[in-house]
Figure 1 (tube, rainbow, N blue to C red):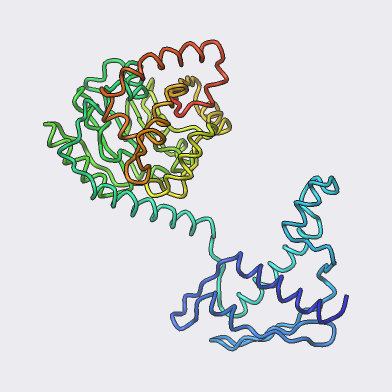
Figure 2: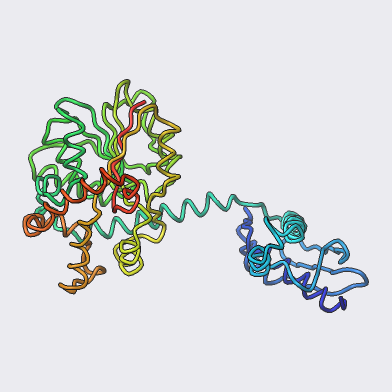
Length: 391
């Protein structure tokens, strides 16, 4: 391969590796990592490449060209996928793996020589995700008229089958200690408080917690607010609950991390109950692709592997699936009534309008039960799943 092509290939590979790693400096006069990388000067020298930088801690690094593997068919992801499809590879391209490790090491050497230290990329992305979720839900809380939320309807409407089932499954909760993780606007928290539970409402959004407290006051009850993300509850070690409830939450978070952080706070013989959307129904997935304004980009509806995680952490796990043929209601809302899924949250609206849809929902709910009794695997094509766990 001509030396000019090798030189350009080296530079390209180096820049790709630099973009995929995050570094920072404690020196306030030091430019950002991106600015530093853009300022680097590359030049060809006999048998190798010379990399120069002039900020804070100036330096030069000479790297031989013959230690990297450059070849015409390339080691790009597109080429790797083509090879896998054709049967030439059954795993990652070994040349790509070697090159990646090689250039990552050169980037680290340059960064450390210039006074930068590597930052945990996953930690940064996690922080950004939490901040995005917080901002989104604060704005949502600000847009709601809390005084007009009917807590009974939100939890007892025919079109709220998940909560009706959970209420039945929990039995008498009067006097029980209950933690609502990701409480949102507080419809569930306040409902549980109305049933006599001692409720702690947790959310990463202060706006949502404020809304929950206002909703509780409007309904003549009280809850204990607690600001925290589900993946880091920041509860005292002796904080134990008879019931831990997470409604429509887990598809926003790292599921296993959340389970491991929550489980220690479950009292002996306590119940952990959650409900969330599933990932497999094509009609719901089409809705998700359209309704981007009322959802956060990090959402990940539950898959079968996610459901199996519960059996890893709990001795008893029960699942119940909802919304199969009853999803016809959403098609009517979108295609017949021509309602805009970015102007209203269909999953909220259908509960608020439960009385209007009962004529259609109730017979279809009976049909769903029949179908799922005969063909239980079709449960994965439902919209939501309720999971009830005991240690």
